[in-house]
Length: 282
Image (cartoon, rainbow, N blue to C red; front, side):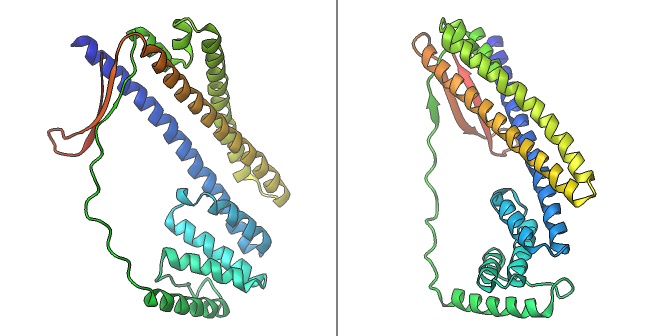
């Protein structure tokens, strides 16, 4: 019983570490979005409308990570930029994107000219009429089928499993696959070290960019920050791919020795809130 409890605690600790890694990446991504949104607003108030369109397109590629309010604001600035650039068709399509997200959206008369508001209201009226004329789609089926309990079989000497989780490739090395194990160990070490360095460097470059005043200096420092941000994400993704592949390959090798049943199933503890239990049985 003590051995099983120890194994469960170690697995929970590793899951917490992975959660912290991905959370750190998400927070850094949010900070990057804020920096780009600030640059977009500066370009908008400076009447650099071509730059507004370019920065807005860059932000909209990350739409799932944007807050709804920020997304609507990005689309508003992009639509106005198109309108001022005399690209009314593109402006209309962008305003329609806003209405698809929030059909009752209204432009603030304090921040938008009457001419743009009239243009938007005309598009809104036509859009709402088209939506009202469309037939109502039938309701979706009531209950989705329950997912079955997932059961995955891999298998180990206990110490080797923990070593493989800690350092991808070490498990293969312990099992006699010196070449593959050495390569995976080297690759995981390099990508982990690169990720740590690039996380630190991206934070430094972000502070420099946000503290810049001169426009030329802002553009140069933003380019440095954006490049470091992309390399950091690449290093994190590379490490994740190596880690997942190493554990998968290791499980295949161990399946030929002992049998380990690995279950993921829903549970309901004493406070009756849904949760997910993860446990291993040797």
